[in-house]
Length: 323
Ligand code: HEM
Ligand SMILES: *[C@@H]1O[C@H](CO)[C@@H](O)[C@H](O)[C@H]1NC(C)=O
Ligand SMILES: *[C@@H]1O[C@H](CO)[C@@H](O)[C@H](O)[C@H]1NC(C)=O
Image (cartoon, rainbow, N blue to C red; front, side, top):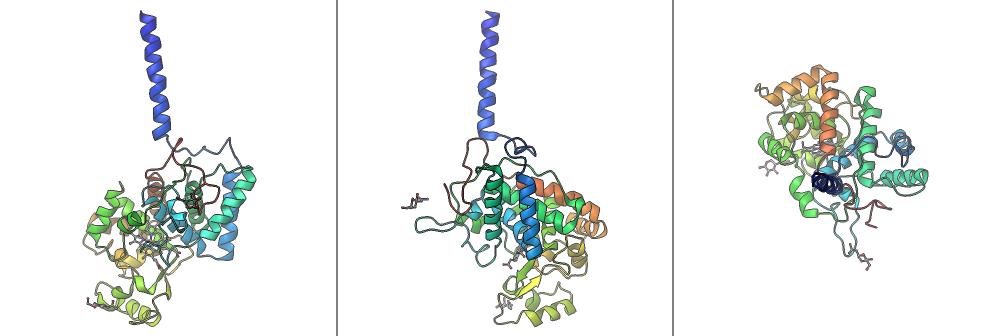
């Protein structure tokens, strides 16, 4: 009787473990260690080459990971092309004429599938790894972290979710906070992750209202931006998000202290009111190490948003379309 009971308990335990593994498997830094130990070094070398070709691409790759994770989780959905019978996320308002880096993702995918001799690395993981490597290449070893892996790729995408869930630059502080909260991220994550804007560029149209209509901006800074971003036209003219757009450093935060945030949403993080976010901006501007520590932690948190794992989804052969 007792032994019957024991085997029954054992069976239940095995079944529960199987169910957990299938539906809620954890990401792990060692996911590819056995199946393809070359995967991470190969990805890093392609990212390195791409950044040497064009410094901005590191920023573009980081942003792709963000725009992937904030729309139904980190599942590679942002990479799917539109076709006649499929509408993806690329034409959603926050993405159209804006996100870039897809050909580098294709290049990484081809190189890693070749090195592994079969498609074992998901497109969602490629984005997480490329983002991590870009940040470390542009910012130094303090920014390296163990990237969690094992995400699988979605067979679907949602343009409506991309429009609804990605924060626009017009958002107020409280709108930003509640948007991040809806993704399970707190104020510290918001302030640290906005530090993504320590690299890369923005189009004139995304900060035009700020430089012509707002007062919470340093006057000389606004005046100089009006030269590259005219009141009418020039919508695609580019401006660096901080003064050092190819370096992950504290300049983004230092500029916020001086009212030199480029986007409305950037300056919302610092208003000198002594709030938590003001204090974090001050901390990160003073201490690159504090920023590096929190940026890494928040990137890992962001990378954990609703991944597909186990037998969910698939490993795409081509990041632009479902298998
Ligand atoms: C807090 C809310 C955020 C808002 C409102 C926002 C908004 C924007 C906007 C409007 C642009 C310029 C887009 C264009 O010119 O078309 C941009 C660029 C960028 N964003 Fe954000 N963003 C946010 C958070 C983040 C996060 C969390 C990351 C990554 C951790 C990130 C990384 C980037 C990067 C790297 C660029 C430059 C991309 C490039 O040069 O290709 N942003 N963002
Ligand atoms: C779209 O149509 C093509 C060709 O008819 C088909 O092979 C494919 O499976 C369809 N895709 C989706 C997502 O329904
Ligand atoms: C400034 O604000 C006015 C009133 O809201 C708006 O109509 C105008 O388009 C804004 N100017 C720019 C350059 O965004």
